[in-house]
Image (cartoon, rainbow, N blue to C red; front, side, top):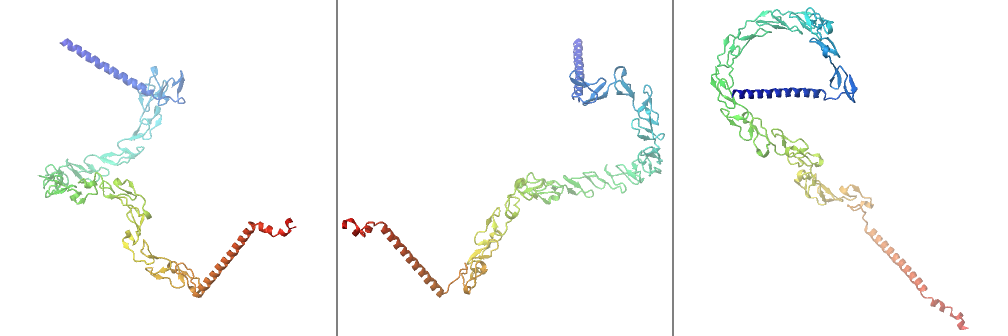
Length: 482
């Protein structure tokens, strides 16, 4: 049995080693693939052409699409404090010098081969690469040129501001703090800031508040949530609210009411004390009791609380419908899209219908007066008289000498007698008889003329149709009589 166990252990160990080897190969393979995943730029630095493709020139390694990383390998591999600057050429790392780059730069030098002079020496030390100063503890400034005035503390390297040691305060940390161990001394004023559970000027008194904090100078308890009483010894019964620390009365959170804040707001109300009404939630669904949010809004309303009407020009569900044009540019109703207002004399969803006969004005609610010889204006209700009539009710005829609409035209007839509607002139009785006689004479002359014309036509036609009559007139001269 022991031999079998050893065999199984060896098998498992072999499997584990195999997995490790495969993992290492996978990592190496991915590294090689990723390093060569980007093609080289034929015009890039140190890129050479070989066997119809582009590769890095000898001594250079690919970086992105160029070969700008030098390679130092074999006997030319760089040491710990060296960097490869050109193929198989090493140089000392910044901050080191010497034949083997083993010597660190003195405090007053930095940079390549320690050739740069440090400006903060001897009051500080330069960074090996960029030369930035790190000042000594008693100096500050860009070049460590300023003396630190902090008597019991440290200077800020850039501003010189003091950070005092424990137990000291003041601009130069020259004043002693008189605070107990259960407090922290405020550096600018020397005031003691008590730790939780302590109070007093020097924080040497413990709060009697059942593990709740107290005010630093009065010692009055500031109870944790769910506690109340002079020493925070009583438990708060407010379910959704806070206790008054003096008497334990509840101040409910928004959305709840009742002595112990157990009851949510009734349907249709929300907020602090349930005093606010829900907006236009769809199908009168209840809103959230704390914020008054609705799931969806009634048509014509939007906003998280459904308390805002649609923007001008839109209506309907979610305010997505675009208002059709209303006559005279009036807006549409935010719920159903109908025009909210029509000019006097017009009605209809689009204000496109004139008031029917007999009505006028706003929404055609007014009844027209009697217009005897005219029509009622659909917008104003004023009687528009027919030509020849005037007056409020168009019940008077134009006076003599005037005619037309509103009797605005003057007659041009003898003695100003004309038709009040058309302006045609009227004739006197003797003028009328003369006109009749003249007309009769003209008619008689026309009939006589027509009769003469008819006789002439008949005679001419008869002569053309009777040639024998012409021959009989010449018979005595013919041969038969000889």
